[in-house]
Structure formats: structure tokens, C-alpha cells
Length: 212
Image 1: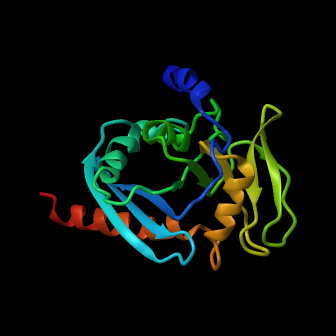
Image 2: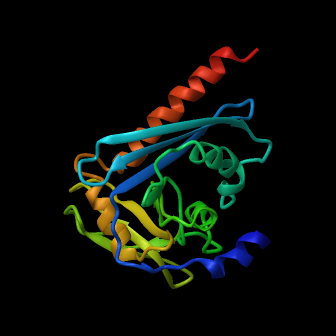
């Protein structure tokens, strides 16, 4: 928690240069009850959403599940997978929080600072308060924590529960939400998240099957 408090002032919630996202990566991790961790990264063409490259890594963790400290459980294996990519993505979408976090420093912020790549947190659940956005796709409402705006509840499919978008690093919230909508042509979750989730779960299943 002290490290998060110290690092959060380094987060840049703005576009340092005009955004040109030709490639977008999604990442996700899965665990079993033995402490095995499977991390997966999928890099997509931002225009066609074709898969350009995938990477996986296996690891272990003794760090317990503690809400708000996800990065300390997942980052080592995630970074190991990132280091095997031959494509450096222009944007990373994390299945986690960014600034919409009790200490304003979620997993997406931590990863953004480590990599120097623009990052966005797209979470399935909100950490904070928000009003339900209008039912149409593209509608949004502000998420606040202690009256501080930290992200948006964004409707990616009409009549379906919103996702919760917040800045990780090196991007502004308007741009982040526009990118999330571009990555959700059919489903609630971004294609980056959907494909990375499937890949890491398949890998974890392999790990669990071969364990002694």
C-alpha cells in the first residue's frame, strides 16, 4: 500500500502525443489452488481486430489474494509474458482497475509505469460510486471514490451491464473509452480481454493436468 501511495503521483492521465493505436494488447491471468499462475497476452490489429501475436508465461505466487493489491500477485508472470512478445503494442487493455482504485493506483497504473506503454483498466465491477448509465451502447456515467472522479461506467452493449473504464497511464479517459468501444463490436468485454482470458485458462488447465 505504501508503494502504491508513492507511485501514484507518477501516473499521467493524458495523451503525451496524438494517440495512434495500430496495435492493442489484452492480458489476463488465471490461478489454481496450488499457487500456479498462467498469464496470457493477445496483440490485435486495432482496425481489423485480427490476432497478430500471442504470448504466455507460467509462474507461481505465494502472495495472497488481497483486494486492491492484485498487481503484486500477477505482475511477475505478466511481465514475463510481455518480454517474449516480438510486437510492442501501442496500447494495453487490462482486465483490472486503473485510477478507479482506493489508492488511485490499480494494476493498470502499475503496469503502465513499468512498461511506459499507454494502459487502460477495464473492470467487470466498479470500485466506487456511479449512476446507472442510459441503456444505449456508448452511454456512460462517472465513477467516483470519495467524490473524486476516477473513471466511467461505459455501456458497451445496449441493455447489458456496463464495464468500468479508468486510466492506467499515458492516456486520457475520453480516449480510453473510445478505444474500449472500438474493441467491443459484439460483446460486453473487449476482444482483447476475451481472447486473453481464454488463452490463460487453457494454459492453466494444461499446468493443472501435469502437476504431480
